[in-house]
Amino acid sequence: MSLAAKLPYDHPYAGGFSGIGSQPLPTDADALDYLSRVKAADGAGVEVGVATAVSAFFRDTKAAGVFDALKACCILAGARTLAGALVPVVGDAPTNVADGFVEGDYSRTSGLTGDGATTYLDTNFDASTLGQDDISMSIWAESFGTVGSQSLIDQGRANSGASGIFVNINTVASRCRSSANNAFPSTSVGFSGISRSLSTSYEQRNEATSATRTVASQAPYSAGNVTLFNFSVAPNLYSDARLAFWHVGTAIDLEDLETAVSNLITAIGEAL
Image 1: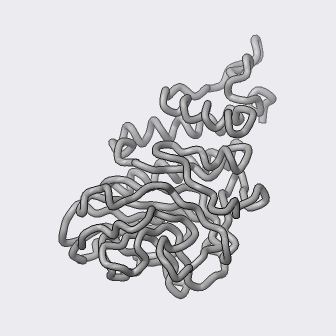
Image 2: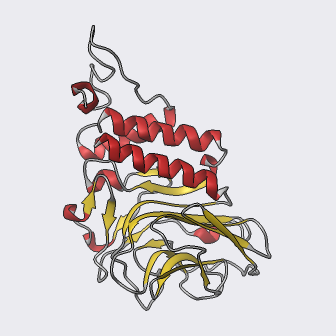
């Protein structure tokens, strides 16, 4: 890796050195705004390779028509610090409840790891504000950890109108505006997402495999916000998974989002 590639993206020589060559820089305006907010939290700008990976994510999701569907979202990788990782792509910043997550729980290349006992994030987003038949959620997991049953992202647990992605005795499953529990078509780490645009069914997607679940929608669960690494309603079901991305939003093309997130996480890893 060249010296220029290791420089912060906003360094005067980030684009390369005179007479030696040049390298791409981030160009998307919204990505630059996000990167500046991450810099403020981190105390320094991320490396050029990380910044261009982020810029490509913004560009690709916009080109695919899915960016505007993201209403709350974080890239839990790439930033120099935990504080930077909790800077939102869109929406409000999640709350590190009781300051449970510490710097050692965060990896720049693979994300944030729960302890399966006390740590979780409040996204500060209430998904009941979205339409009953217009919702999506996703996570990127580098590991599901060792806890047999755990919540990855959730609002409502098994109550009527709940939505979330969780591990149910080592099987990845979901709910989408329903109390019904549905296993994913596969249980691989990586991308897992749900999206509903119909009252009669919703889509699940995990690691390039999609399935339609015929489950009628219920009125959205509306007590509390969406949470990560734990159910949003008692009893607790903490997670020790390692997550590198999450989002909540309106109905979305899950395949397009998966492609963009996969490219993002791969590029961050290569840059670091």
